[in-house]
Image 1 (cartoon, rainbow, N blue to C red):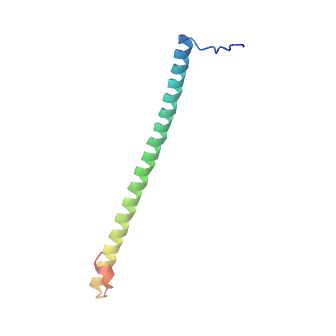
Image 2 (image 1 turned 45 degrees about the horizontal axis):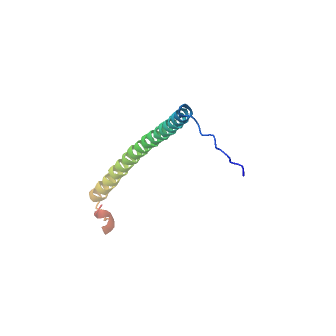
Image 3 (image 1 turned 90 degrees about the horizontal axis):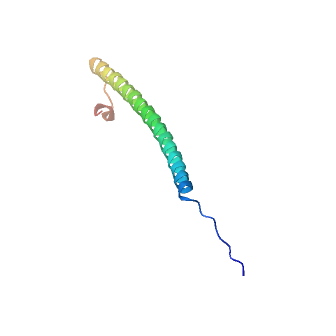
Length: 82
């Protein structure tokens, strides 16, 4: 009967391996954070652009509503409540 022994890493090797894994994990997390920050900035810009477009459309709607009122043009009921 032959015995087999597994060679376990020494404490210094274990520490080095853990340190390398920790550094790799930190790098991955920092990369993910950077990606998330870029995505957040894009969403902020898109949100601002949409808000600007909504404001512009509402101003156009108000101008058309005012024009219709001045010219005595009746509006459909669903447009009067906006």
